[in-house]
Image (cartoon, rainbow, N blue to C red; front, side, top):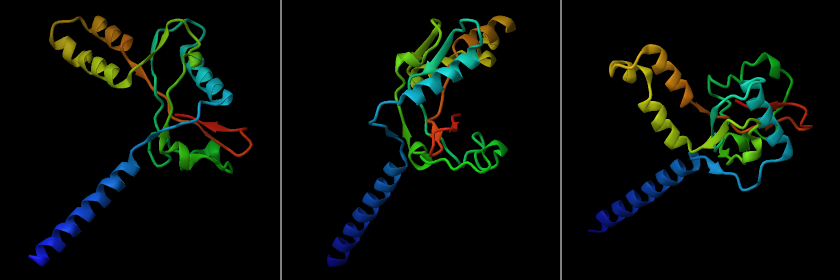
Length: 166
């Protein structure tokens, strides 16, 4: 009886430790609002993507953590970052922000819920819609019109002269 109580306490302790460590890996919503620099950078990224035309774009209303170890970000091997120390990388790799509407430079750009839009993107995949009889050109155009544009948190160097966003 005594051994089973000790075993139960040990298992309970281990489960609580496991859930605590799993929760610490989950991104945390940033409590501070975006700085003017961050808003400017997000706007510039969207302007650059949209070009001079008023591009229709579904922009995720939330940023995602900037993962320095991700092959997509390639921060480890980026030649352009040689000698630049990103000061806030520890914070931005575990947090996210909600984007305010003033980051949108174009009238046709809109902030969308990323989970809801991902479902729309998935259901509008050309490989599915073409199988259902939609012409290829229409299927591709439809897929692009529902695409989701997401941006990471922004990492800065100490002087705020350099910034990294994915």
